[in-house]
Amino acid sequence: MVENLEIDEPEISDVSLRFLRQRWYRQIWGNWGCTGLGNSRFLLLLLGVGCQCATLWITLPLWSVRAEPPNLPTFSVPDVDFVWPLFLSLVLTIALPRPGMTLHWVLLIIAAVFDQYRLQPQFFAIAVLMSACVWPSWQYFARWFLVSTWLWAGLHKLLSADWYGHASYLLVQRAGFPEPEHIYIPVAVTVAFVEIAVGLAGCFRPRWAAIACIPLHLGIVLTLSPLMLDWNASVIPWNLAMAAIASWVMWTTVTVIPQGRWQWATAMAWLLCPLGFFVGWLDHGFSGVLYSDSLPRGQITSIDGPRKIRGWGDLKVPFPNERRTLRMFFERAGVPGDFLHIADPRLLLDDQYFVLDEKHNAVEITADEFNEGSVGIRSGPKFGMGLDELRSIFALRQAGVRMLSEAQGLPIYAVEFSADNFDSRLLIALRGLPNLRQVQLSGTSVTDDDMRHIGALRMLTGVGLDQTAITDAGLGSLKSLRYLVHVECEGTQITKGGLKGVLKDPR
View 1 (tube, rainbow, N blue to C red):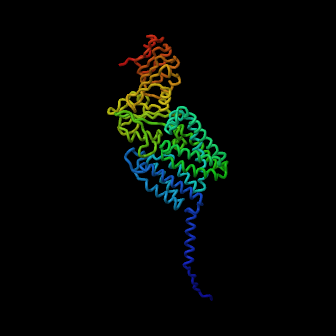
View 2: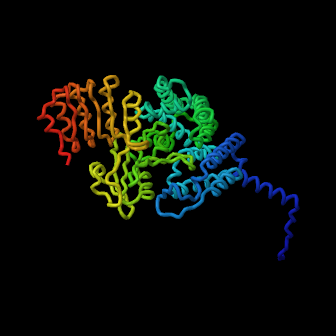
View 3: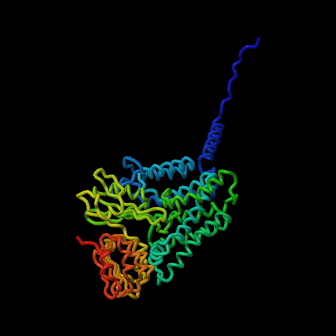
């Protein structure tokens, strides 16, 4: 018979306890902390955290509770201060990268839900680059994000009439280059093709892209710095992060051609999703629309006159110009009876017109209702004023065409051509001036065929055609104008019968 024996467990010495504790710490720190990243990844992560902190600091009022400009929440939520939570999540990211980075993403997304003003690409782009340092699986995701950003930044510029006009001209002019009118087109073309070239290199020769992106983004930093433009400081840290972390992502890319369905799906999603911008499905900030200026814009007409919807100010960021956010701002900042015009330069989308009802809902109306004010509230303005297109103003100004407005900041109501500056191609630009009421063409080489462009100016009340070759046939293009009451036609072949067919009763 064997008796039960009590076996004494060996005592664990203090040395053994310290060993086990250190081993546990190393395991936890290796899984969640910096030792699991390696020196290169951790140093790049520190750079990314520093860049994100700098970006948040520059735009501090954007993340705080504020009264003006109003928040644009996705749905009804209380105002919340996200400043310290975001900074603390970045501190946590240094100590414990994986949970810290997860928390930072959650806070960024929630903050954007609470205020769509925060849908700015720099915050999320830096977060993607930081994530590539923290999670190896994100490196592939970041590679195609970078390719999409470079490629579409160039493509949008090539497809944008605004980039070849006022956008590139103003950048060159503000940068202090002499005679900007002679170099802005070559600069516009060069910038677009360089961005496309870097994007293509990222697809087929990642290490070429790794080298090329460094001077590209450092050049952007220099251009935006106080040495040149002194403008849009909130994207300078982003470009610094792109010069370093994006270069590392491309240099360490292992497989050039996507392998497997997941990789192909990721690559195709990043390359094709920006197409959604052209039909309003994807915001421009996440479609690579960078400085091309081909964006929807809004103007509110109130009893005090028109005012454009703009950003900047203390927030240090532009307004997130989307049809959705422009309408949301109108509903929060407008007064019942106010009108809103959303001018959209995208070929597949038309302009939109709204009036604000008594419940602060934006009600969509037609262009005629907007111009006539037939659906306005009695306490509001009599009619809406359309937003003048910058591309039209730039084209006419460059040609030396005289433009008149009642005061600075008010829409252009009259345009005067001369024999020296008239070009029939400029008449197309008049369509971008929706409040135009008078056009002077006397003594120019305007033809009957050109008059179809004048016939598209729905608010026109008078046109000067003295000493031109216009006949009744050309004048017939103005029959649809509802407010035309005066035509100057001395020295032309226009007859009284032709005038009678187009002039309206001024009553």
